Image (cartoon, rainbow, N blue to C red; front, side, top):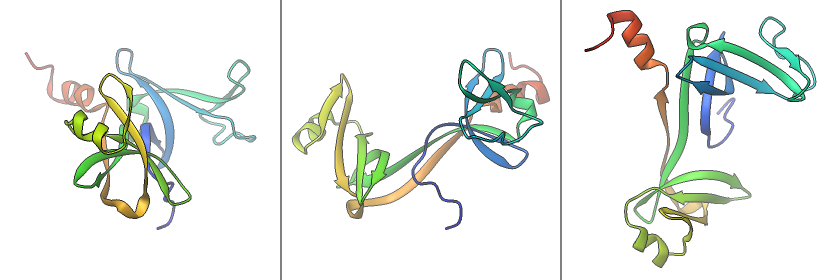
Length: 149
């Protein structure tokens, strides 16, 4: 699979056909792209930012082809988990179902009130898929069809 970067979790913007990690603020419709690579990835978008120590671009969602969140999920022993990281055949996962008791009984460590994490073998994961949610859809819909009342 060409270009596959592994499981993703976060916000992304597609600008001129290129996908970038980003932060999106819907209140002011601001999309911020940041990279610390040595050379400027696109001189028409990015400028050097001394405080960040890298290249930064600030856009609106209208200047992007798409702005979305992505999160990778799978099933482990029949229960839904979110994949946080994969290294050397092991996946760090967060329990994403609704039975914290089951998670505790099956080797998950409670890290927050409703959050359980553990490591599992990637070979034990089934139905691996990425869920994407369009972040700018409501703004586009309201601008295109008028604000709903």
